[in-house]
Image 1: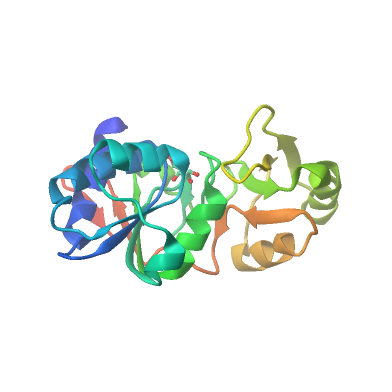
Image 2 (image 1 turned 90 degrees about the vertical axis):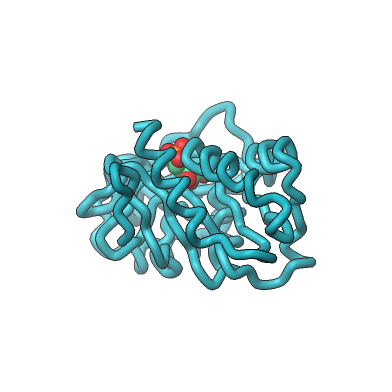
Length: 215
Ligand code: 5RP
């Protein structure tokens, strides 16, 4: 799969243009994208990063990391996903960076999602849905999610997000209406964000392969 991830990531460079500030996601596929972006470091104006992990890799390549508050809207965001359906709706957050990823996706005119073929699904939910929660609300949110969806929330014990919060992974969901579920879960007090990217899906999906497929 790492070959497919690399091929998808390198294809995403086609969307980078001179002078751009590039939004950068998180994960092993994005790591390949950051490595490819290094060749562009003197041609782009910098990057906005979705995690401490990506920030470290960007800086190691000498790519300037900028604050989203200072840059304003971005032209391009490149990120991976844990699942992707035919409508380019995603589950993300396997790397616990979902909240900052969602913020940058929202701020970006074009969201290019880079995946290997194993991430493509007919119905979202086989991958446990990550939900970032304020720590004191963990059991309240877990009970509400169980009541509302029937899915089984499991605390990702030992993981603290870059925002100082915790993650619940919700197992056994078959998400037939991702937009509605995203909206409903966002209403629970204590939920910081939900790893469903349905209201704002990807605009372009690149599936790694020889050659990569652009959807
Ligand atoms: C991080 C994410 C990642 O994009 C997702 O987990 C995919 O990761 P990888 O590219 O390592 O398979 O959402 O929060």
